[in-house]
Image: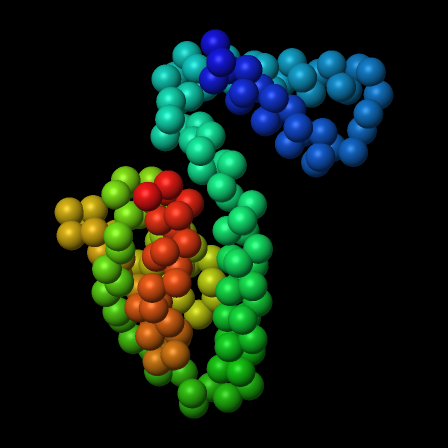
Length: 158
């Protein structure tokens, strides 16, 4: 029941932020939509710790600002490659991840893909590695630095 209440509250707040309409009827319908989606999710069995990771949600704001800065830096690097296409030297690198959960490993792969110039191509759960395509040497080597791994591990709670 607690998971349903939390899920409903989160969905309703998101609906309020995105809708911009605050009449009585629409507020009621928004709440009922959030409640309905939460009840369906509970019936499907996806409101568990992996489906609604409250600990991660509490740590996410701290990592978000860092990720936005990394995205901006990478955008500037991609602009430089666009202006000078000869600097593009695509390559694949294997990134060793220290995450302990599948959700943490996938989050790390998603963070890599979010930063322009890099794309996570494959995630190997058994070896705890992520195969990454980098647009340049700089992008590929940047994935091997421990900063992102530490941030995602902190987000994971380890």
